[in-house]
Length: 329
Ligand code: TYM
Image (cartoon, rainbow, N blue to C red):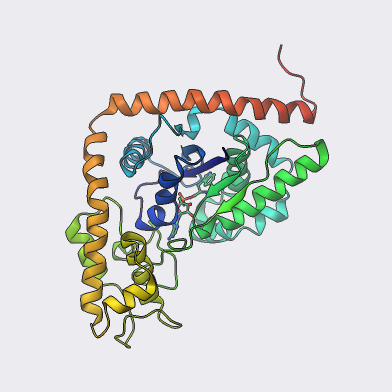
């Protein structure tokens, strides 16, 4: 079986973008592949966190991902900071990653502009930690949204470079980007991606939003003046809503155009809201159970961390030996 690795940052809200772009795929790939998933909490401290809130966010994200359908019996699902090999390999890979490569990362450019008062070294070297996450498990495929494509390219370059110097050490991974949902856009500014850090909460749907909030956000979504439900150029808002509707209903764009022939945007937006609410309802119900069961969560992440450590330590040792470090006997 091919190996799949992916991770998500537990930085508060998990959005419909995270879910449709990545999480939904993680769930569906579990039977076919050897999957390993993580909460990338080391990545999260590149932006300052309040400790108590940070702890809460990590537990909530863990419970939510179980509710989405990750089965830790099948797919180890661990918390990155609990598996020490990640930070260790990241250091080694930092020394095989060029300053110029990191400087070209668009996420770094965006985030350093946004958090200009805290452009720390971790924010800069974030992609080599991400490369370590992936390469430690010899992953073949990495299911992510389109915004992570550039980081995946860099991961491939780092792996190829290291393999080129020392011989085959790391599997060179491919991104696995869905056809629909890879770029869910803001409901308020549909030329920008849906992001949890948007100041305007109407711009994104959170997986845990109340039904009435989801309905309100969908009904207020920005569209255009054509009043015809079809995808096309200059129709970013409608393209986005059609993408979302297609993901949660399984209908094709043609089927959607047919369903709403002769109908206005009001009807369409209501239908999108209702379909999203219905899709998220069972996830929200399961979440309410998991979050109460702290012992079960602890059991799952502890066992998963042990499994992840025992897999990843092989790759770490192999890489360190190739570099020339003396192993501890
Ligand atoms: P993060 O936490 O920002 O996002 C998690 C996943 O959600 C996807 N995503 C989206 N997909 C579609 N539309 C959107 N609007 C949208 N917003 C986010 C992201 O592409 C991602 O797949 N660096 C990563 C976490 C990470 C990681 C890794 C991922 C750390 N190590 C190793 C893969 C492999 C991140 O910050 O994702």
